[in-house]
Image (cartoon, helix red, strand yellow):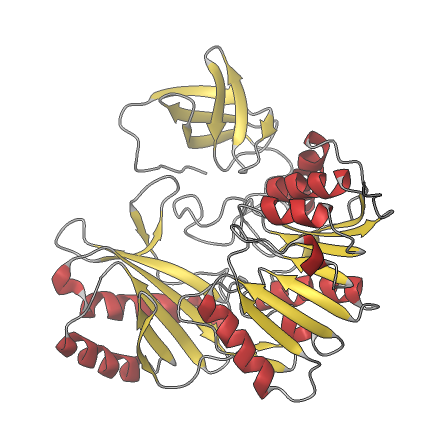
Length: 427
C-alpha cells in the first residue's frame, strides 16, 4: 500500500516500526527527535515513510501485521474521509472500544464498558462534497487528509445506496451551475424519505436570476429541497426524516445523526434507561430524535438553542397523533443552563450536547435532585469530563455503551446512564 498526501514539501525517506495507535488512528513510532505519526498503519508493522517533522507520509508497508485487511474503497489512502479500512474487524472493534476505556481511565472513572455496538447500518445518510477551482477545471470530491486538495470521486461506498453514486452527480451539477463565481463550495446532501435535501455553503447571496435557474436545476435533479446557507431556494417536497411515529422536516443544513441506525440505536438506549419515568427533560434536543420517541410513552420538555430545530420538533409533535404532552423551549444551554429548581421537576434528564460537551449544564445537574441522567456524547473526552462532574455531585455511572455510528473513522459515540446515589444534604 502506498499513499501520498498533497501538503508535503520536503521529505526524508526512512524505515520505522510502529509501536501503537493514537486516538486519531495514526500509527505512532518513536524516533530520536520524538514520536512520528503515520496514517494507515498498524502496531508491529515495519513501514517506509517520508516525513518532515513529526507527521509522516506512508510510502509502503514492508512487514504487514496479521491484523491488516484489504480496504474496500478504491479511494482509501488518498481521500481523507476514512482512516481505518485497513484494519480487520476484530482488531478495529477492540481498538475503538479501547478509545473509550482509555479515556475513562485517564479521567479516573472506574466502570465496566459494554461491547461496541455497530450502528453503521446501510451507511451515511448525509455526505458533504467539496467543489474547488484551483485551476481552470472544476474538482469535486472529498478532501485529502490534512489537506485542502480535493480527491475527485465518482462514488462513496460508506454512504447509503441512494447517495453512493448520485451525490457526486448532484454536486457536479450544482458546481457547474455556480462555476462562474469560482467560489469554493461545500455541498451537503442528505437522503431523506422524500428525496435529496441539498444545502450549499460558500457561495454567498444569489441574484434573482440565479435563484430562478437553481429552481429549474432542482427540478432537473429531482431534489426535494435546495438551499444556500440554509436559505431555502425551493422545496418541492418536504424532506421528511422519520423519528419514531413522527416525521420531522429539519431546517435546511441543520444537524442530523449520521446514520439512521445510529439515531435509532442511541434512541433505543435512551428509551431503555427512561422506561420507568413519567416526565423527562431532553436537553440539546435538536429536532427531536429522542424527544419524539420518548413522547410515545411519557411527557417531555425539549430544550435546544437552535430555534429552527426546536420549531421543527414542535411542529412534528403537534402533527403526530398519540404522543404524550411535549413542550419545547429555545434556550442557549451554554449560557443559560437549566437550574436546580427547573431540573428538579423531572424524573430524568437526557443530555446530548455538541462535541464541546456541556460543562455548565453538568454542574447544575450535579447540584440537582434529578434521580436519572442519560448522557449521550459524540466525544469520549468531554463525556468523561462531564461525567466526572456528575460523579463528584453524587451520581453513579451505571452503564457505558460505545456506539459506532461513524464507522471507519476514529470517532465513537458514548451513552452513559447515571443514577443519583443519595440526595446531598444542603446546609
